[in-house]
Amino acid sequence: MPPKPEGSVSVPARPTFAHRAVLVSIDFGEPDEAESVEELRRLTESANALPLAVVTGRRARPDAALFAGVGKVEEIAGRVAETQADVVIFNHELTPSQQRNLEGRLQCRVIDRTSLILDIFAQRAQSHEGKLQVELAQLEHLSTRLVRGWTHLERQKGGIGLRGPGETQLETDRRLIARRMKLLRERLARLSRQRQTQRRARDRREVFSVSLVGYTNAGKSTLFNRLTHAQTYAADQLFATLDTTSRRVFLPEAGQIVLSDTVGFIKRLPHSLIEAFRATLEEAAQADLLLHVVDAASPVREEQIEQVNAVLAEIGARHIPQILVYNKIDQRGLAAGFERDDCGNIARVWLSAQTGEGLGGLRLALGEAAARRKEVPTEAVC
Image (cartoon, rainbow, N blue to C red; front, side, top):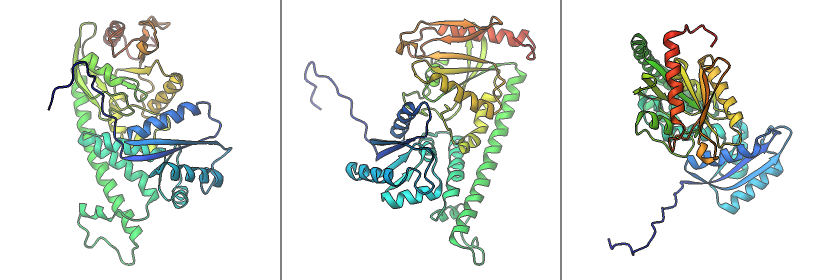
């Protein structure tokens, strides 16, 4: 390869996308509609699809047949033809009949927000357990939209003799999916029991357990790497991390701790995903302390905090002590520092995981929390 001319600049290759998408978001009076559309765009890019157009509108309630109404669907069809898109992505949950009706009108694939998030999870899951969890969530979601096409699952157990007398193709497919889901739940239960055994052993050694939680792309993995000197995958994209990663680390301020990086949360996280990932999220539910990482640069950070707390409540982790970690202060020109609550405990820390600024305040907070765990009964108020 010939050498580059002196003074030349390398231009990074533009990302290639597997699909061309038209995005649809209908405003039903929610206050953060603009941020929701931007989040949909980022989710679409995370799923390896290029958003070519965004169709928006306002309605009092969804149309029963087409969700967006006849006129709006005609507008969407026009944008599909104009952009030659091969998929339309709705920023909402569609019923099976709405999805089928829309595909008939638009003559292309139509998916909703839940399907989009499931697709991203399917692409990103790396561990054996993560893949099982994603497959279970996909089957939970798709079983309600089943028409045909799932009989390939019969290869899991052998197909001869599965079909009952007079049983339709659809009934067979549903039974095969139910059998596969039962098998996945059994495998995940075994993995959960193994994790509980490991956790009990850790508890016997009285190791302080800390879990990173937060909205997706808040910078949890970058902070995890900064604290543990690990090399886990971190990127400026939604759901860069799916599999829980734990590392034992010694911090002079806190001693030996186990730090866990968990999957990020998101607005309207599909319930099937919460259920499927419940075993993994138990790591947060069993922690001694949660570091709730917040994107300080986000204009909707308060709403994101509420979304994360809602999911924590659903998995039984709302009672665990939290420290709010406001990350990405370098993007807002904010000063590093920390703030104590009425009990004198550090409750909020401002830092940049990218630059390391403010990390000393977080280490101090971890050290004080570890000391409190040894000295103060868990039932104490402060």
